[in-house]
Every structure is written in structure tokens, then in C-alpha cells.
Length: 229
Image (cartoon, rainbow, N blue to C red; front, side, top):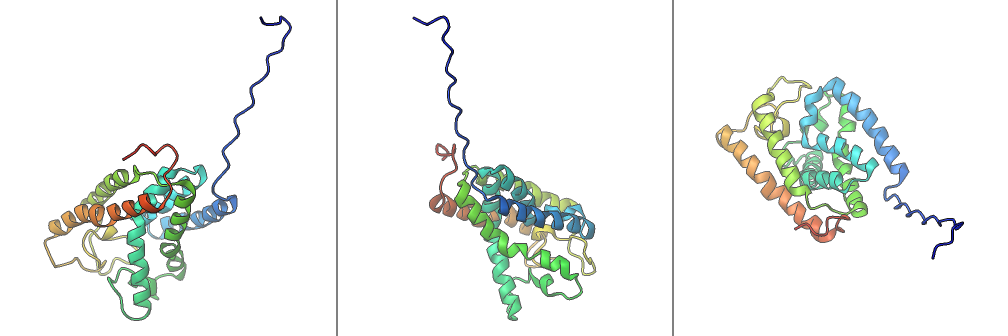
């Protein structure tokens, strides 16, 4: 029987889950993004953010602050493999043995040094994403979501963005290599539509899916994603 004058006891508040990403890292990344975004918009224009790597910069900026496993996983599954290729090509170009030529611009003295320095994020962002996924866990929804985003982006880049041009300057052309690996001239190995079809099928199958499988195997599963296939 309840005593009339009894004061109900307040239930203890649920403890807040501790933050998994150091605030210093969040601030450092934000400072980098605060420099890169306006510089890129000024020199390259907004279409430059159609590049997968630049999309990852923006998604990581949001994901790192709200500590979203999904946003970070999207970036990881989407750019880890391509960025490894970028790093290999950069190192090869540095010693005179380029692999694809995709990093030639990093050694082009006619391009502003600040832009080339900022583009160095291609080398360290993959490492940061590995660290963030290890902290937050891998969300398996990343593969289908990023693959769908990539298909839409590739179609936009092929049909609506400029093709390779030898005198493009800083204008973003051949975004995401939908015309081949050169920004000066389109590839001639196959018809343009065949190259695009290869990209649409090959990127999800040969880059995103293997990365997804590795992340599923070696990284912790994001909270709430345990039931996902």
C-alpha cells in the first residue's frame, strides 16, 4: 500500500555513451575542410565536388561530428580502394614510373602549389577513414547505398559534365574518369559507352564489393547493424 506523503524516487538518468572520436581530431579535420572547401569552390567550382573523393571529404566532415557509422562507412567502402591506387600512382610518378597517370597533376608546376598541397588529402584520408571505422564500426548498408550514389554520379559526369580537354586549365573535366584516365584526351581502347558501362559495373564489383568484404571481416560491426546481412 502506498504511503500518501511518499515522494516518488526519480529513476537514475541513463549514462551518456562516451564520444568515440577525439575532439582534437574533429577540430583538426574541420580546419582542413574549412580551408579546402572555399579554395576548391573558388578555383575549381562546385562541380569539383562530384569527384568521389571530394564527396567523401564532405560526408566525413558531417560523419565525424555526429559520429555516424553509416556516413563514415560510405566513405570507406567508396574510396579506400581507389585511393590506394592514387597513392601507388603518386609514388610511381614521383620516381618516374607512373601507373595510370592519374596523379600527374600533383607534379605539374603550372598548377598552384596550394591546390596540389590540399590534394594531398588523397594520401591521408584513407588512413583516417580506417581509424574512424575501427572506432565507430562498419555499417553494412554502405555498399548498396554508395554503389547507387556512384552510379548516379557517373551518369551525371558522363552526360552533363565536360569531357577531356587539352586546354581545360583548372576546369574539372572527365570527372571520375568517365572518359578514361587522361583529362586531356578520351581513351580510345573501346567505344565511350562501353567504357562507361565498364565503370558502372566494374567499380561496384571490383572496388566497392571487395572493400566491403574486407571491412566486414576485419572491422567491428556498427551498433544496430548486427542483424544486417
